[in-house]
Structure formats: structure tokens, C-alpha cells
Length: 445
Image (tube, rainbow, N blue to C red; front, side, top):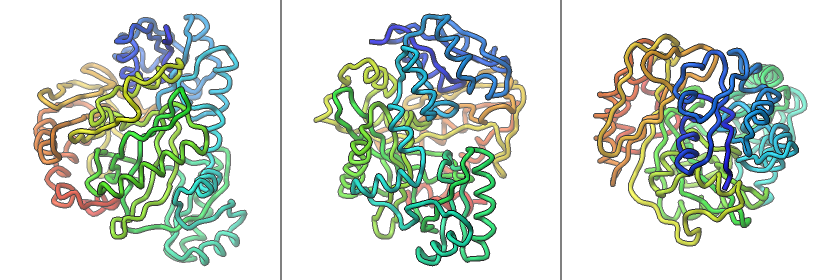
């Protein structure tokens, strides 16, 4: 097993990785920016290294500073968490060429799945269902118009190199396509350094369902169930649950088999997620993208399968067998995760500030993965995620009742937060019934 681990991230995910590392007797090393010096993850690590000022480009995306920290502390491995450098193939290669262990999928898999058009084509060749769309980038506006006419409106205009719900627009007709194409292309060039755009069929009433995969050290790829991720704002997730209330045993079998094929197609190792769009009217699903990293929502899978995904990541990276029997995977119960963000609960606009009060809920079936505590300052430099509230139980109904109590007793004062949104959601008939889709938040607003 790895003996020393540098966590190249911050906040709740750094804290969560450090917790597992220390439980396993692994020396945990944190890196932090000047803005994060007082956050819990820094204090909880065995060692912490300041790597730069608040701006991510000068700290958490500063590969030279991170590698220097690894060298100075004698770190044996680097875990990138999610976001920042987690899906940066060049960084993964640099880590390994420096003689360190990369706790994640290989750089080739990251590269293959990082371009959405290439990923679509690879998945189609592997027999994974993909939505109707372009097999090459739409070279210009005329090409996009021609493609959309063949696919049929409405269409989704997507940045080929995008991710995290960014770089997407919907066009219901040609006039809208002309506007969205220019907008998405400009955004993609600015954010990702790649203006390539693809056109896909847009499904107005659809669910977002994903499958957790794990590529084992012996080369096998296993699927650890599905997660429902349809409660979203601006194409970014707010709530995840497992199992999905929309997935029957027969559909689950097809989903998991397709996800395993997806992983096998790129020789996948370590943790990853195959994201799909599900048409609830027909039970058809289509490959959306593969996230080549640990997901924010991994705790719901941890509960229903009774495993620690970070531990499994570390075991794969160490060349060790998993803690579970890959041929006898079973799930139990239900889990829901709510992302507690420092944002206005109506318009979801960021609201940083000093945390004057922070009281986490407790009780049976309640877990909080938090990045902050009382007295900390939520700065505008990073993602607005404050904590993840995970509620578990034997049935979905039991979890919903526990979730209401947990949300009501979670006290945060200072920065704006979206706890009132979850109070509203847990009383929403559509959500409670389980028959919701990706437009539920817009209908609530």
C-alpha cells in the first residue's frame, strides 16, 4: 500500500481523502493556498505546504508548485480529488514521469474521454448507446446548421472539450442555433482553449443517470450501481441519489453492462463515472460523457455498496486487490446527497462571507462531508460547495423523512446558502414521487 499521499485539492474532498488515508496509516499531505490556510483540511493533514496565492492558476492548478511540494515532503503518490487538475492528462503523465504514483485513471484514458466527440465515437464503436449527433466537430456555422437539420430540432450545442455542465446551449430552431453556436464556441475557446463544437439531439424531458465504475488492478472493470442526478441548476447537480427511482432491475442490468463496456474500451483503471441521459418514457439511455475521476457524489455509492471508494482508489493505484469480491457485488438500502452551497437559494448566485454559525446535523443515517466550520471565510476564488449532506436508510421513504430533519437542523449563518431550497424540494410532490427529470428545478422556479 502507498505510504505517503499528497492531496492536490482543497475543501471537503481534500478533507475526505485525508480521512481515509489516515485511517489506513498513510501519511497525508495537504497543499493549500493563502486563502485556505485556516480551513479544516489543512489542520487535519499530517503535513501541509503552502503552494501559492488564492488564484487557482497560481496554487491548485500550479503543477510546478504541487510537484515541488511532493518532492519536499517525500510524498509517494498524488490524489487529485475532483476539479482542478484531476482530468488533466498532461499533469497525470508528469506525475508518473516524476516517479510518483497517480491515484486515478491513466493519462491515455483521460485523453480519450476528455474530447466529447472522440468519446462518443469510441463508445459507439464499443456498443454503448449514443444520442444522435455529429461524429466530427461542426467546423463552422453552416456545418452546424446542416447537422442540426439532419438530427432534428431541438439540439444541444456542446463544447467538445467541456465538462462540469459548462459550455452547452439548447437550440429549438435555426435562428437559436446561430446564436448558441457562436456563444458556445467563444466560451469553449476562452475556458478550454479549444473551440470545437458538437451537435446532439436534445431531449426536453430526460433524466440524468450515471454509473460508478472501478477499473481494478487486475484489469477487470466493475460497475457499482447507478446514481440519479436529475436535480440540477445550470446543468450542474444539486442532489444525487442511489439507487435511481427510475431504474428497473432490467434497465439497471443494461446500464451497468454498457458502463463496463465503456470502461473496457479505454482500458480503464481506478474510479470513474459513465454519465447517461435516460428517456423515462421509453427506458432508452444514451452515453453523455465519462468523468475520469472521483465524483462529488461518490458517498451515495459508498453507502449502498458498503465500501470506501477512496480506499479502493488507493488499492488500485498500489496494485492491490479490492476489499470486496468483484463477483459478488450487492447493494442495500437508499442514499441521497444534497450539495450545500454558498449561494442564493432562489437564483443560485454565489454568496461568500464569514461563517458565524455552523452546526451540522447528527443522528442515524446522517453523514456530513464538509469543507468549512465556524469562523472560516468562504472566499470568491473557488467553487461554492460548503458541504455535502448525505442521508441514508433502508428505504427511500425513510431517507426522505430523515433528510427533512437533517436539513431543518443544519445551521449556517453568514454566507448565503441553499438550505431553504432543499426544504422546498423535500416537500415537492414531483421529487417525493421519484418521477422527476432534469427540468424539475426550473419548474420550481
